[in-house]
Structures are given as structure tokens and as C-alpha cells.
Length: 296
Image (cartoon, rainbow, N blue to C red; front, side):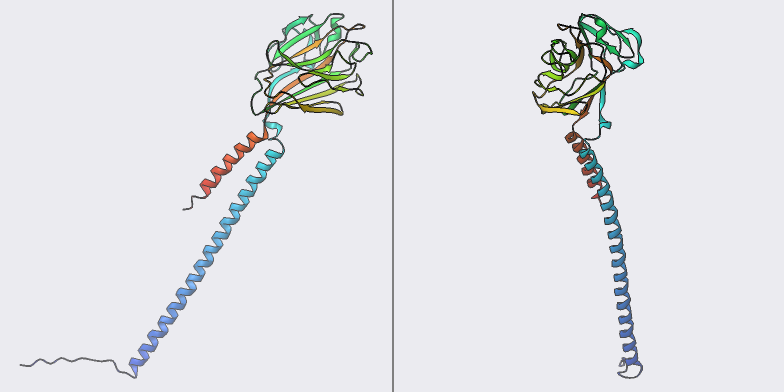
């Protein structure tokens, strides 16, 4: 018995040709839709990329501006730590020796006599005797820091600027119990406001005996310093790395009337250097960038 097989071939014309044309048309439409979807997806991705990049740039701008402000403003004195504060105006009829300041160690006698605090301390009350009262800071000045001293004076009763008066009256900064480094006030060599000690001798011959606000800054790492009384200033560079840790109110009798100084406020702060603050800021930025680069 012979087997027969039947093979059916699509017609070359008629419905077979129409089917092929329809298939080609469908393929074309499908390709067009794929291309359109691809373009749409690329557009969405580009939009997300732009939005992400914009957000990243905004955050970076905020961080950079903040860091720049910290550096320009010296990190702000808001980072300063007060290591000594004496507000005599809150004290009435109390001896200076043994008095505890608001911040810092109690006043002790280095030499001379005691005086009474009455809203201020005026060494004129010692008469012909000298005064030497010393008090310590809560922290010693160290690397990467600046010491900032401010004190307010009142018009004194004695001879602060009398010609021929060889006495002295002012505030001294110490690096240890007996190591006087800087004197600010009326030195014995002049009858004006001036300086003495490690920063040399500088005088302001137009500042009178009226109430004044006095500023002194010293940079530990470089030895750079500035001294301002009223509207006059002096500056320079002295030995670096002086570990200031206390101060003294001092006055002596001169060869006429007593030389005195009247004080209503003494404040000492330790300020981090801008370079230290900038380093902290850079570490923060590095951490932010590292986290930002971890894209999922």
C-alpha cells in the first residue's frame, strides 16, 4: 500500500499577499511604538537626572556658602569659650581677695594690699600702697586657639596720666603663677595708655583718662597680636605658643599721687582658629559627597 502526503502552500496572491502586507504593517507599528516608548523613557530619565542634579547642586551651594561664611567670619565668635569673666558691677562692699568671679578661679593676693569692690574695683582705694590681685582661667590657651581679652575701665580718681608719675596700673597676662608675659594699661615708662613685656612698648598718647573699652587678641600658633584702646590700635608679632592661663590687676604708687585703674568688667575668651573650623566643614562635605555617590 502506498502512502500519500498532502502539502499545502500559501497562495502567492490574494489572501496570502494581504497577510504578508498586514504582518509587515503590524511590525512597523510595533517598532514605532517601541521607539516612542523608548523616547518617552529617555525623557523621563533625563527629567529625573536634571531634577536630581538640581537638588544636588542646591545642597552643595548651601554647604559651600555655609562653610565660606564660617571661614570668613572666623567661625563666628559664637564658637568662643569664655574662660574668665568678672563682672564687678554685681558686687557690693566685698573684698577683692577671695572673691570668686563668674567664671574662673578666685582672686588671690600676689603682693600689696586688698581693696573693696563696690560695683567696680578701683586700686585708688589702696592709697599709697600697691595692689596685686591674680585669678586663673578655666582653660590654658593652646594650639589652634586665639585668646581674646576685653576689659572696661571707668575714669580713675588718681593719677593715671600725671606727668612725672612713674607708677603703673593695668592688667597683666601670665603663663604660670609667676611668669608675667604682657602688661596692658599705664606702664611705668610713660604717662599714657601703653603696653610692656613680650609684645614690646607701644603708647597711645591721645587717649585720656575717660572710661574706655580695651581689647587684646593673641594667636597662639603665630604670636600675632592686636591691642585696641578706644579708637586707637597697635599690632605686631611676638613669641608664639605662650600658654596664657591667668591675669592680674596691678598698680603701684608713683612718685606723686598713687597710680590707679578702675575696672567694671574683665572677660577672656578662647576662640578656635578658622582653619580648624574649615577642616571640620570639609570633613562634613566629604561625608555628604560619599553618601550622595552611593546611587541605587
